[in-house]
Image (cartoon, rainbow, N blue to C red; front, side, top):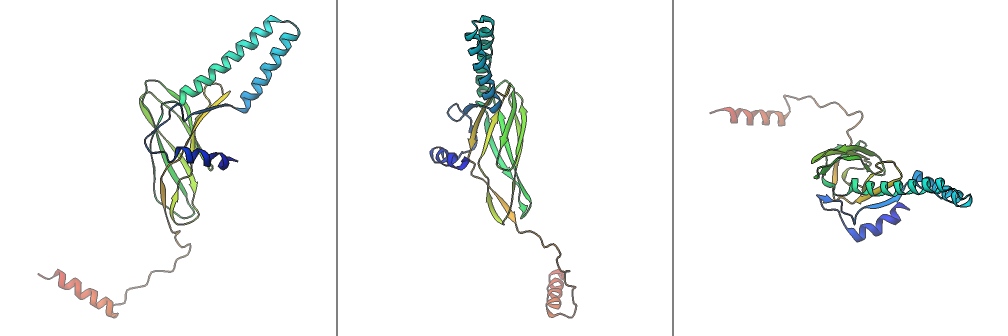
Length: 212
């Protein structure tokens, strides 16, 4: 289901060129599971207030609904304007986890709370201070040697109350170099044999190079 959604989005947006700024067109906002049940509770409160003609219940229901809608705006505002400044990865051996370091930059004079990066195999989160950067890490299991491309990931937050989730997909053009896995029980290194012709030839070359 996720790939069925991701492929049309990727074909429309293309590869995310870094640095990539999260604009309003890139950010999606939807209620979380907790937020959906909260909406059902508000609907029941409003129906009960209308049924029993209870103005206090109606006032409380509309007040909570207005607060919930405000949290949707705060979740979007907490994510908008963040720069995915760069991504790096060090070479690893096959069978180890590749660590992709995602550098997020906040260029505005306000805090960003609980910014999370998600992938299929892990996640990491943290706050970003005003006009500062924060490095988050995503891990990806390696299974063959060569160049392993980084999977798409999303940057999201559920600030402040967890009722709404704002997120944006990132499609990086980055690969990690995976070396062949070392042998588990390698044979010992061969001992040098002074009588071997190759050894005598190498010794003669070293002597000739050292002589004036």
